[in-house]
Amino acid sequence: MISLLFSLYLIAMISTIVNQRIFSLTTFSVALILTVYWFSYHATDTLDILL
Amino acid sequence: MHIDKFRLLNAIGLILVSAVLCNAFYGQFVGGDLPCPLCLLQRVALVAVLYGLLLNVVYGAKPLHYSLILISAFLGAAIAMRQVLLHIIPGTPPYGAPFLGYHYYTWSFVVFSLVILGTGVISAFSIQYSKGSYVSFKYQQWFCKLAIGIALLVTLGNALSAFIECGLSECPENPVSYKLLSPP
Image (cartoon, rainbow over all chains, first blue to last red; front, side):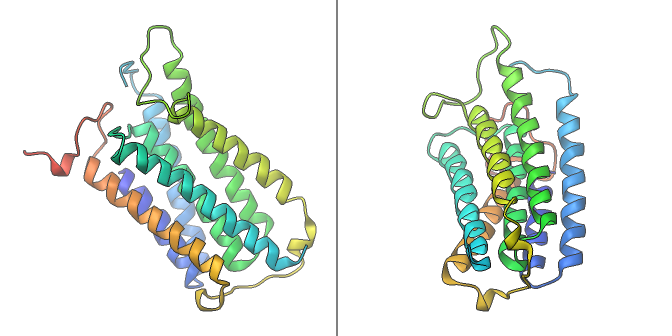
């Protein structure tokens, strides 16, 4: 999942460089929403205090 | 300050944030500390900050780009703070080895705070918004090319590292080995 997030940001970056601005911003938005979701998943997980 | 100077300033930002991510790699590969899920999410937020800086380098500075940097840095600070709070509970061991007296998640919170502060200051210079258009990689200044290249490599490195550590599934809470390099 985390590697997917990094990959989405990488795609957004490459899209920026090749002037695909709308696609880039869309990909970034999707990645950001998934990041928030994944953070929420870990933040509300049962605390494993030996992290 | 000339408009191109702001592109350069954002390129310097790209280098600095990439350096923070490289330092995390140092802790991972030299120090032997495998990143936990929250650690990886902080790296993800740093990459999101890189994206905002990259937009400023490629398209010129725009308020939207600075907003994306601020949102990403705020998210990163929230993730770092969550981890700091986990580890200040009495009797809770810290995660990983300290770096210059503090743990990586504490440094991470400091870095995100500095990004928010720096973005707040730099975005106040309205001259940078007067014009600015797309500049292809070929016509970028050499320093901007270098910064873009490093940012892309660092992001790719993180994607590969996370894939080797966790595969496509959820990362373990307390990772001790790379999932794809361990015998089944």
